[in-house]
Length: 214
Image (tube, rainbow, N blue to C red; front, side):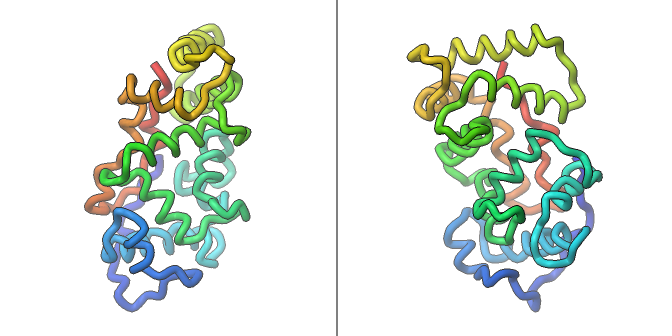
């Protein structure tokens, strides 16, 4: 993943975009007011790489992740969709902060479990189907520039379904997912970004460090 350097600077005189109040955002997330201001600097940098309009477009999101605005991938598209809470094709500052807060070390485990579930629930049915799980495993492997045979991928997916689909209906519901993650805590390892406590200069690298289910 492309890391940003030198993108934080004083924001004492800057105005937060789209009417988002930094005090309100701090009250709704684990971030402090000063951290919200630092995130605003990062947001301004990301949202002006292609179109300077205080909004992060998908191409700008792709550029932030891969240094390539044209690279498309199911996984990265899904992450963008989850950040785009209003489903209007862009990420506003409030959406950026609230979505990023899930990766904060102080965010609740339940919030992380729910976000991860939504990531795999591609068709937003409230369940993770086998085909969705396979699609995401393939997409994540692609992000990692890793290749496995189709049989190896099927083996990963089948093992996960056997362990997670407790009622045997061929899909994973939220409670089954919670139980599965509780038994396999490594799945949430990359749902926490320690540097969000101190807001270093790097953009969250959850793509390059995301693990597929064992």
